[in-house]
Length: 127
Image (cartoon, rainbow, N blue to C red; front, side, top):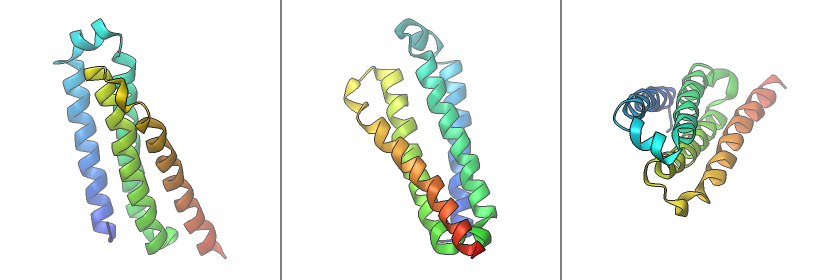
C-alpha cells in the first residue's frame, strides 16, 4: 500500500470481509461454533477484523497528519496484523486447528506496531 487511496481501499475491503464473515458465522456456522464452544473466538476475530478496517479508513483520512511514509508502514502492519490475528482465530474457531495459535500473538504484535507507527508519525509531524 503506497497511497491514501490504497489504504482506504484496504479498509473498505477488510470491512466488507468482516461483515461477510460475521454473517457467515452467525448463520451458516452457528451450530458448528456452538457445538465446539468457539462462538466467542469467532466473534473476537470478527470484532478485530472490523475495528481494524475502521483503523485503516481513519489512517487514510489522516495520512497528511501521520505522514505518508509512517501511514504506509502503519497500514501495512495493521493489514498484516489483522490477517494473522483474525485469520488465525477464524481458523481456530472453524477447524479447531491448534497449529495456528502461535500466529495469533504475532498478529497482535503487528497490530500494536501499526498503531504505534501512526502515533510516531503524528508526534514526529507535531515537531
